[in-house]
Length: 453
Ligand SMILES: [Zn+2]
Image 1 (tube, rainbow, N blue to C red):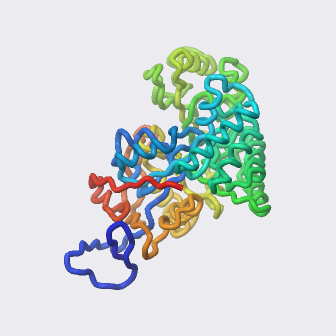
Image 2: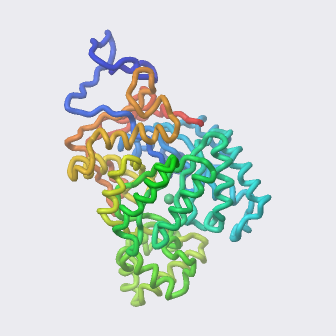
């Protein structure tokens, strides 16, 4: 392959021209750069525009603005990113919670009035016209959790009108997973919009082992004509706010908390990852904290909630809550792609480990699927969802976003204790024809571009 400027100029057998740099890739795999369709590096890019933990995995393009929260206004934020480019390409979705908060301000704990929904839809249209690729939602989170299905249909339709897609963290990934899935499918069908199911999972004891049933519901919808794709991160634990654990929102009610703890298999399966209000709790499980404070885990949980409320800053937790068998079944579906749900500075190892982990553990060690299929799940499938015609595949004339890796050694090293640990086996990464990763370090180049819809 020959790279000229920012593009792939030729693929095949040919002699290098005088003065051309030649890279020996013997024994290595050259793939399109990985496209991460669910990435939370919005703020991280300010601190680390070289995006070390992302580039080191082979990620060359990220879609930001996931889970309903996006920068706003889209246009001026993208302009700012153009003025201070990063090592990788970035694109953005407009967040439903973001526009909902714009319209309803602090009075969001209710169903929106028709005029408010219309105002939200208008803002979604504005975000799309300023370059967003679609609409994201996070219906499990506070601001969006009060929205009705009708509201979601209206805002999704506004994105559909401008050729966008709807990516969603559904209303429930726990006991009511199937209800939430039905709502998601209904939104896609009624708004006539392609659906991207974010971080597909079955997160509580009562739905563990039901992946085949979940897949069947989705396949029915696909057969019925809905353009439905999903992404999955390769870990059996999630990372979110502590309040997500309690679906009825009775965070200080002992029976509700008891149920919440049981749903993830007990307080020992919940680790406090980040808690600005009380750093002392970080890296410990609720069970450990309860023991050292000599109180019941339920009481401990409520104490963490109260301390968070007082500081207006909820604890972020890691909850072990998925089965390997469900993850495997999801990943084997041809409509499930790889995405990290992580980002620069993430406290979850997926932020620095996702792509090499899939290649090393799921492909090489467990043989869940082939290497070409894994690469498709990391490149052309997300590119197709984003409508990127000139990235995500290796063809003459497309942008030279490339990753060169060793299929025999590539693997993640990030853990919950060391979430920033870089992977091994990624030999070189190019973004728009410029080398950004080589010999286990960033080159310092920032050739990334802002991509718009
Ligand atoms: Zn999410």
